[in-house]
Length: 274
Image (cartoon, rainbow, N blue to C red; front, top):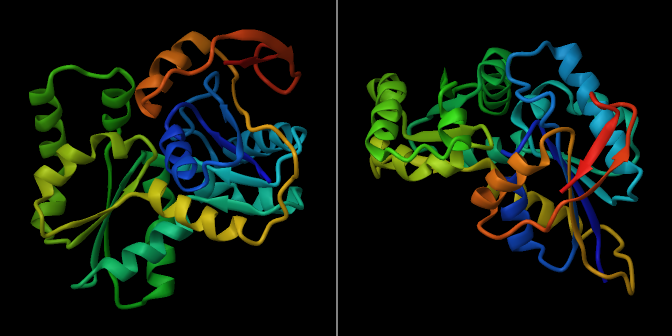
């Protein structure tokens, strides 16, 4: 008995979410789309991000998915309402579960949020945290260099520590007690972030909280009987690079490349299967 779970991100970062969801829901099929041709979403307008998200969701829906996870903070912040209006299946983003967890974790009521420029500029975390608990203090900070550090698998750990230290110093000065990682790439830097912030600061990984929410939601869905398990990966450009970086994110080998399929919504008229 299996469910078909679809998931999209602007690129490879959402694989951290996939990894956590698969850990909790191993006996299900997963269909992941990385919009690598149009990555990153972080610097684009809300209307553009919404259009991309609707196209991504429509494609995954054609695969007969039972649940869609928007494994992208920027798309979750700016486009989830539009996607929910478009599709009749359950839609889960990465933001709401993380907010619930952060509010439960904080002891002093001072929460820090780090993310891409677009996610931080949207103020989605600040607005939702304060709506849920008006007395909360939120300090938000964009950390744009974190994504290339992860994707390029930067080998010099000392430079990574220096970049993390430079970015996070303002949060340390603010005496936050909880830090929410508002980007799917950031969990791969968690050891450096935790080292810099110290043991007194709780680190909230939205990939983990999203997986927990997906596990709860899947208990309410009707699975398919006698359907073989499968994982399928799609990208809108450069499948070789996706496979190389994706294996770093997932910790296991992604299946060999197979031919592209026509898909007129995407930049080169093709959608690449990895």
